[in-house]
Image (cartoon, rainbow, N blue to C red; front, side, top):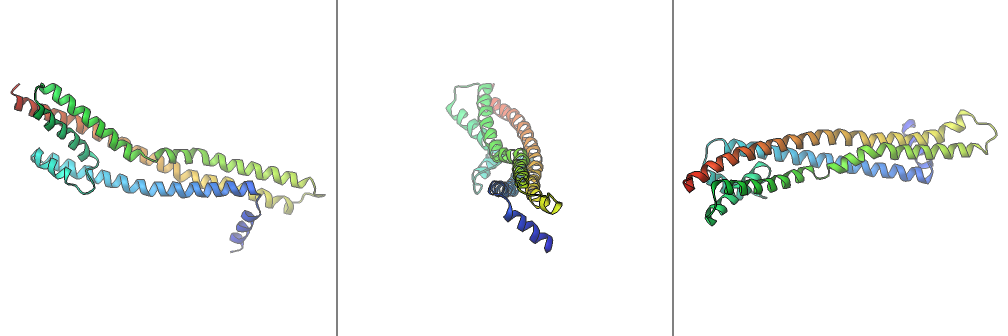
Length: 228
């Protein structure tokens, strides 16, 4: 309890610039943890939805039935289902319009799926840049607070006749707390960014593979319907 009270006392005794740095780091830490938990739920939901859709897709069911199921999903389709929906919608539209070859129809479907994939990747990547920024800048912000606090401590020693440990320790300890808070904000942000960036890349690889496989299936369907 005494240690906790002494730390709190040091925080309140710190200079205004150092206190502002500490408040900024606390806010950055709160934002970082908020993004980490939100991104964790989003990626889990997207991965589970993609797993579920992929199992249904490769089960050999009717594509029209799968398309209707995807369009009726509550909150809209996400992940792989969204890419499938965009590609199959374009496929049906191109067939109804007529006047195109199978290769041209499939190329239009690929374009629609690329747009849907970019939208899905952007959705799961959102706020990762903020995590990277917090992780890379927080230690320097904390270091700035430490340097400022130590400068103030040494300037204050100019008016002291004898510099003992009891006089020097408190202001330096106040300054070092800023560095500790900078690391406290930065470390979870860096870990979260690396973990979630890897998951996003893995999802993107899955989307690429699915788009290629689905394009091949659509090409066979187009040739069968057009008789070419």
